[in-house]
Amino acid sequence: MRELATGFGLIEGPLWDDERGLIFSDVVNGGVRALAKDGSISTLIEHRKGIGGMVHHADDGLVVGGRNIAFKSFDGERSVVLLDKDVTETSIGFNDFTTDAAGRLYVGSLGFVVFSGQPERPGHLHVIDLDGSVRTVSDGIILTNGMGFSPDGSRLYHSDARANIVRVYDVDDGQVGPWRIFAEMEEGHPDGLCVAADGAVVVASAFGSHVAVYEPDGTLRQKIPTPLPMVTSVAFGGGDLKDLYVVTGSGDGPSENCGSVFVTDIGVAGLPVPPCRVALD
Image 1 (cartoon, rainbow, N blue to C red):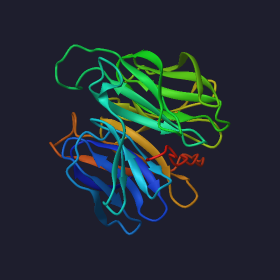
Image 2 (cartoon, one colour; image 1 turned 90 degrees about the horizontal axis):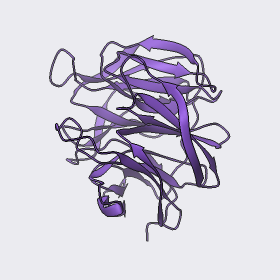
Image 3 (tube, rainbow, N blue to C red; image 1 turned 45 degrees about the vertical axis):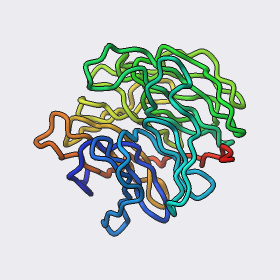
């Protein structure tokens, strides 16, 4: 596992971009940055803190999370709120999310401020349809985290970090069925995830010092040790999506801003995450 960048507080939302390289956020220090193929780092969005998830939007921009779910154009000229925290009575914001092949958004809301000492209130799972309408489709997620679809789009994986499980839902054309346990993590807490082309589910283990790779049936394929304990998320990238990018926070690390980006190879390519196509008007 090779280190590519360091000096960040809490890296989240890794997202591969063929033009810009690896896009990622710093939750505590703010901003969205791009790590180019030559190793240089540029800032795409300044200041905004709390971004736990990101996806591309088909209209030349990003969808970012945090206090709301919002579209931000790459040119900085346009910002559109797609979902606000009044979606439920208990929501205080949003963490991770993903898209299906049609471009719908599947979004996890938070019921408490993480690391604040507040009582843990469960959040929800919401679907933002292409016309911008919103459906709340599941509840009871204590700390919503990484999401991703199986290669055929029939299953949605969803980490609950506090319950130490990865949920799975059957999905059919945007309709989400009841959840069941896909995998239980015994060391650390399941955080961000991504899905490989062969159906394996790759899950970051926050405070577990590893990345777990699960077979499509939920059995553990391998554990990949990491240099830092707070592994926050993972994403496939590179031109052939065969590079696995691993990002971390600074928790339990040697310094306050030691959040880092690493890259490794697990012998399988990843699935591309489709762009969001939710209407902006």
